[in-house]
Length: 454
Ligand SMILES: [Zn+2]
Picture 1 (cartoon, rainbow, N blue to C red):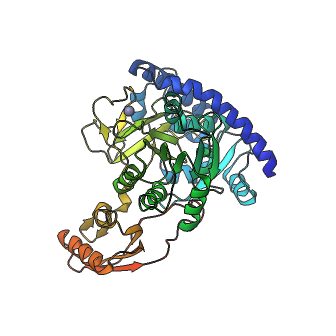
Picture 2 (tube, protein in one colour):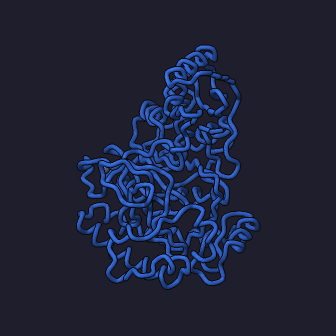
Picture 3 (cartoon, rainbow, N blue to C red):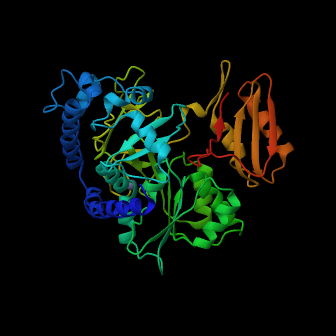
């Protein structure tokens, strides 16, 4: 598909997103009863469609009556793993004439983002599990995900006076196909807003120059990059006056949140999503944690066997059922992230349930025999050193090799890390700190893997 043709399709698509945002903004004021009624209707519609059009799901949904199903009936269905999704692709997809081989071909042959003849987009992502995923987003699913990603901010824009002059959004995402982040987040949410895409994986000096030149009033992107921009701003190396920051795709670490607060003192909307489900939760910018997008996604916290657990009980997995994805239904899909419900009402007044900010992933923790050193232990030391602007921790047999960007006291850092490993009971404690000019980000997505286990 030629780029110009893609841009025309995308403009038509974004026009639908803008009109659908009206409905989505109104949903933010829904009561619990409205949310739950909507969830049940949508769940029944999804189950019926999947039973009819997806051979994979038809098998798994045998014996379930979609006309009567409720959320609690989901517990009787098997879980769906990342491996299921990728290995059974052709049996899951509901579009005639689309299979995994064709989707792979589209990714390989497209020069830029593209739509196929059925108005679908094909995306891919590596993910932390190591299983490469290929995903299809149909027209309506993209509209849903875009509205979820932006409705909270769009409502806030309407309520606020807004910045003087033309609002401009700097989009610090992968910047290139096949990762979904750029099409999803390169979306203007206020009248007359301009957007500027800046590849987050470029050398930091280039990112810094591009952001300075763009003079954005709004930022969206990877928290590790925006956190670093905030530290540059606090150090006097970047002069911008953003009024709102949205983060996604990586865990928002406390140190990055604090750096953003210190630099600009603006609302931060953290987003938790996945290429499979789209957007699962978004922070309101006021209260703690993230509000679940319960109108489009059903989440279940379950034990190892897939049995739901109570809000106060620990869960082994988080399963998601995406209510908007008809072309590739995900029903009880294991997201690999762990969520912790937040009790009580949010100060913003929303009836949508909240979860705590999604921390590092489970596989960020390093295991040495019977001893586990959590990623947070490294973060506490590396993330709070003002002379460390970025870091990567690579596990070794007896400790870790640590790459650091900045101007730290490497000897002091090394002894602090060795002492920390000692507190966790590691017999030998091998720490090597190397100061480097830059870190290698994932080539396709531009994401930084901060913790690399052996
Ligand atoms: Zn809230």
